[in-house]
Each structure stands twice: as C-alpha cells, then as structure tokens.
Length: 178
Ligand code: NI
Image: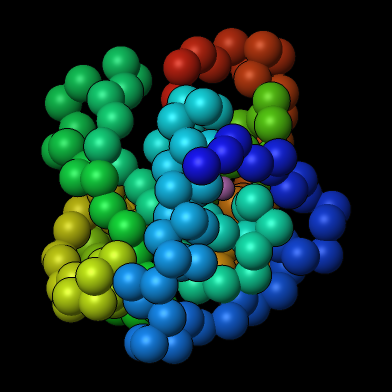
C-alpha cells in the first residue's frame, strides 16, 4: 500500500502502551492495509522488524523476520511473522548482551541485555494461534519488537551507556534496524 514515515524517539507515541486489537478486527480491510504498510515500510527500510507504533499506529501488532543478515550468517532463520496481541514469557533468568539498532533511533547502536530463551504467543493475520519457543537472535528480535508495543525503546534497557553511540563512530556495520 504505502511506505510510511518512521516515528522517531522523542515522539510520545512511542512511549504509549498500544491498544490490543479486537478479534473481530482480524481479517478486516483496515487491518490488512496496516499489515501491508508495515511490510512495505520494513522492506523499504531494510529492517529486521517493525511495530505499528513506529508508523504512527498505536495498536498491538508487529511484523518481523524473513530476512538474511550477513551479520548473523549462522543464526537460526527468523520466519516472516505477523504477530498480534503478543504475550511474552521468559523461560529462565539468563540474559545475553548484543548490539541492537532501531528504525526509530536512526544511525545508532547499543548493547542490550535480552532473555536468551523465550516463549511467545499471539495471533497471526488470520486469527490463528502462534505459540513458539525460541532462543538467541529470534528471541531478541521478538523482545525488541514487542517492547515497542509497551512503550519501551532499546536505549531504555542499555545497562552500560558507554556502549551507546553512532554506528560510524562505533565501527559497526550491517546490523539491521528493528
Ligand atoms: Ni525498534
């Protein structure tokens, strides 16, 4: 449908808890148009994922995956996923640090702790149940995207702010934004 402008950090919309999507809205032309806008924008921005608040829509839907990253040649493939009204359940207390970037925080990267093992549940674009147990990069992408639905941006989770900076100054390359 359309590539939408990205809402950037500083806009209060990104700090809101997004509204859940009522089951009767799933499959509607309006929601399908939103999904297409999210996909078009993610592809245009070469993102690993995107959440609806990032294109100005405060609803609990995110899409992610379906990409290949040279930075993660051995990472398990993250399947292209449309996730509505997600619920995340960490499987233990183990946290792992890695770099993240965000379409809403352009040009920057930071090291963010995330749960290594995660169960996530929700609905897809046809209202079918999604229930997955994932680890590592897949788990990280889901946590980053779902944070957007609850008003959290990755810089708010950085433990050592000395790791937060501009991509060119940090000497980092091709990590996709989310
Ligand atoms: Ni993001």
